[in-house]
Image 1 (cartoon, helix red, strand yellow):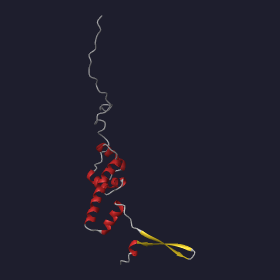
Image 2 (cartoon, rainbow, N blue to C red):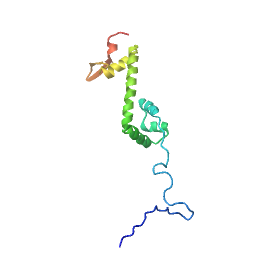
Image 3 (cartoon, rainbow, N blue to C red):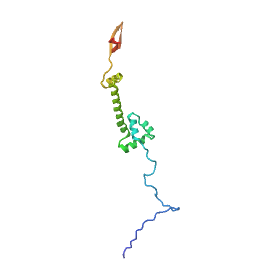
Image 4 (cartoon, rainbow, N blue to C red):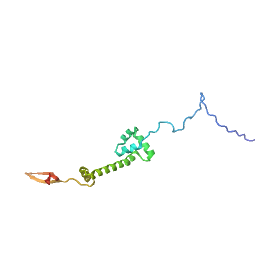
Length: 150
C-alpha cells in the first residue's frame, strides 16, 4: 500500500472575534519606544574645554548624564569620562597658549606666575635671629625690603 502524502498548504492566520489577526502586525521589534536624544557634540566639546562637569554638560544638553554615557559609548567607543578628559586637554592647551602670549606681551604678574609654577622659582624670605633678653625671636623680612630700594 502506498502512503498518501498530504499537500502542504499555507496556514491561515488565526483571527480574533472582530476579524483581525492574532500576533504581531505592527512594526518590527526595536522600532518603537522613545526616540533617541539628539546631542550636539560640538557644544559638548566646547563645554568640556572650559572644564564643565558631567552633570553640567548633561543639563545644558537637556539629557540625563547616563544618556550622555550611552551615546558616547555608541558613537566614540569610550566612556563619557574618558571623552571629557580627552577634550579637557584641548582646553588646557588653549589656556596655556593664552598664558604664554600674555607673558610675552610683558605682563609681570603672568611672568611671575609662570616662573613660580613652571620653573620652580620662589620668593626668598631672609630670616635673622635677634637676641632679646632671655628669649629668642625670629624675624622674617621679604627680600626686597632689605635692599633698601623703594
